Image 1: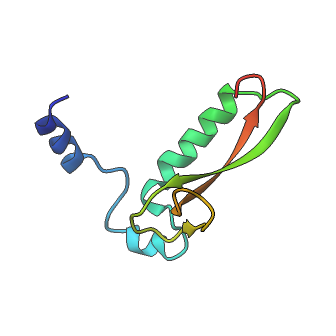
Image 2 (image 1 turned 60 degrees about the vertical axis):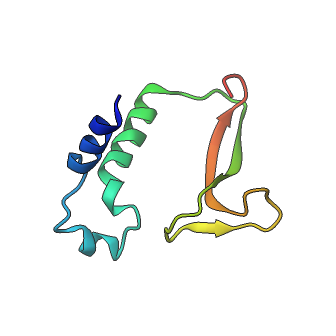
Length: 93
């Protein structure tokens, strides 16, 4: 994909109604992507069934931008980021 097409898609793609975003952001930090996120979670629940050997894993995805749920952990190599919790199945990782 050329940079020209990428910039065009970036400019015209919208996933939510910008007119009501401010009202929704007061109670929901994921308001701009909430609909797509809920759809993703629903499809994951429909198409994947974990086995009995599962564990909860946490990871820090490096991110230095601005968002309300960015965290600082001093003993990590990437000190700023978004903390992600994942349910991990040992046979498929």
